Image (cartoon, rainbow, N blue to C red; front, side, top):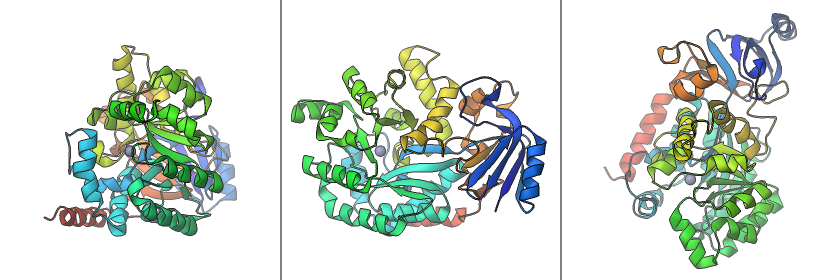
Length: 434
Ligand SMILES: [Zn+2]
């Protein structure tokens, strides 16, 4: 179905400043791509002449912008939301999360992913980058819900056999999918031997796909790397050759100037996860420093059990506020930069620059409408500030992914919200032996 969006405030995200940052106008979607963006009603009329059956969306009082790109999550962990909070990272993982995950199979991951995907779609996220066991289940849930995903089957020393099966299944079932892309997800240097890391790197190279890894999340990871390898995690990964593949590194909290130089020099993108880093008391990533060094920094939520939601609006706001307070510089990460991190930088991180993260003719039609007729968004003086500092996920009204309307008037059209929530509740009750 072709779509004409009229009378909205278009925020294309492909201009730096000036009057074109946002403007009143029209956008047409032809199949899965945006065919025109214009201020002119004549262009809208021309579009309707060519596409008389187009679905018409009146975007009066709404901002029309690219869907948000969440570049680091474990979406199925939505199932584990709230099961363990307020403990340190390694204790959280080893004593709480991993034992429950050990009991989760394909169906639990599938239904957990559906819960997280429903939350993301309702909040305007149109693409997510995932890493988890059973990525085949995540990919299946994502494709049927109509959200775009980059799934990264995840090698870890204690489950290499499962990983080998998982990536083969994803490759087999989703090769050529318009919505699902597969990467490799070497979990971290502390869960992977050199041999298994090499297995992941050679698979990435053989299949021509990127690598998604946790990097320098905590001081403990840094200290252990120094003790074991005599170098930082970033230096170690450079030596091992990971950065020969397109790499998306999540966290990057404990970073020396040399580490930053290495990431910049190798074109590694970063997924900044401010709320997860705050909640697990991991520290504050030097985002301003990394951006100043030319690193492409995007935004992720991490899993819902260390956040505890998948709300990219909160994440943008936190990214900005956290840099301001940590650098004591109120100019750090201005609102528009935070928006870029959640849109075009996310697209660049997954190698889809120009295709995603923008509202432009020829780009893929991943478009959201944000309702700004709300008390907490009035008065309208600076729409960019409104979006970053005042908007909530619940202000997203309509979501289009790959040219298909998946959320309309705040109702998800591809999933039964009540059923998704009650199924998730049944699973967690059973996993916790309630
Ligand atoms: Zn993570």
